[in-house]
Image (cartoon, rainbow, N blue to C red; front, side, top):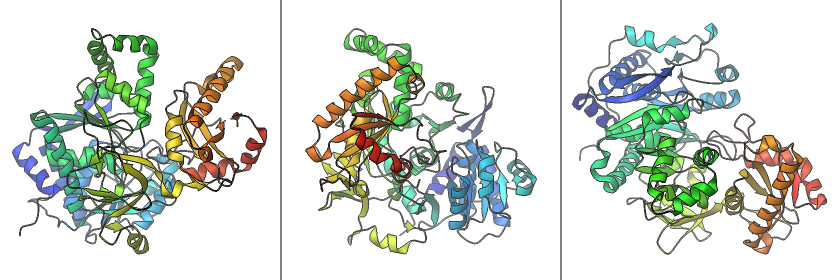
Length: 564
């Protein structure tokens, strides 16, 4: 029996069959872009692969990348694979300590340094003597880093010929989790698993859209160090061959970058979908937009105009992952005519587990398992998944590997959930996040946080209260509202609204789950402060440690809204 066609096999076919087709479009500043065809991309990959092979690194050598998204992230990854290596991508916002941890834990042989915003703070995490290569958009690197320039290497190196092959069981990637509950874990994914998961993603897209998938446009901006972007954007484009991938220049140019791309397929996270809505409502009051959308004669045209203004007018498929999307926000986009749907997956299954079906996904669910994914609910409510994208295991953690699977090979996700009457998965929280108040019954924070986060004044929330008389919630208010809180009138209005929110949320909770108070913190949570992961998930332990000394005082105050 022959080996299955793997991701590199598809890449070599695109190189031969459509060499002049534009594959990658990279902004270079001042509104200018550089296009890379399949032939140009592979020419550079082959030259860098030849250089890497000349270094005589061990088979499967871990080669790291510390870089924001760019065309050369894709090109460098192909070079690593063709040279026989395993890619280790580091989140471009990581601290020096975490950069050092990943490089040392993975035993990286070499580091590619790309486009970065905080290199000065990260520089100390790169071990002395580690060979480095600077990608074209890298910051200016200090001489002691000893980095060679990508352009210099490819200019002097002949391309690696032929079709350098990898075995299905070779490791393609070490994906380090974002570390929301502790030290990042290295998830090992093979060429077999990333190819199988990506094929499944594309197969469902084709069955959904048919020939509409012949010319796709996407924009790559979510961190490529995370498997969501890696699977759904990078690997999907590498296998499909019909996708032009655009990149974003910066946060400041993001909206114009989307307008340039005019994506036909767009994935994002709840925080950005919320910011898009805020941008729309800043230009058109909610009441005026609601009235227009309620008018059958105007609704379609208004929806098109709003989506065009966001650069999303050509989007045929829109998805959301990473965290729950507030139900009202989902309905709002659907009223505009964007069939936004949610999915659910993990690094451990290469982002291939459950997905919503456009036009058929119930609000509050994350859809059904992909056709070749098996899933069930364990006796304690934990979601168990067996996916073609299932990891080989955690790097250097054999004990955790043994604990992470059932006897029949299902991965223990750590998420709690149930299937509704239509077979769609409803997530109800994380096993490790359950806590008991003094009432002795478990509280699941996630569903309560989801309800709080639906309020337009709330950006993020955390529900806690271990051993306390009742649970409480800590809130970060909306970024547009925070600067106005010095005005007593605004503050009183916010306090009244939050008191009403507290009562409304508590009305829908069991007695042991009800919140005693909402606590408003002054400083927003951020990646830089260590309170958010690089994928914008809250770091519970860090946040709870920061406020630990104040908690008893909050309860003693007896106020429904506490200003911390």
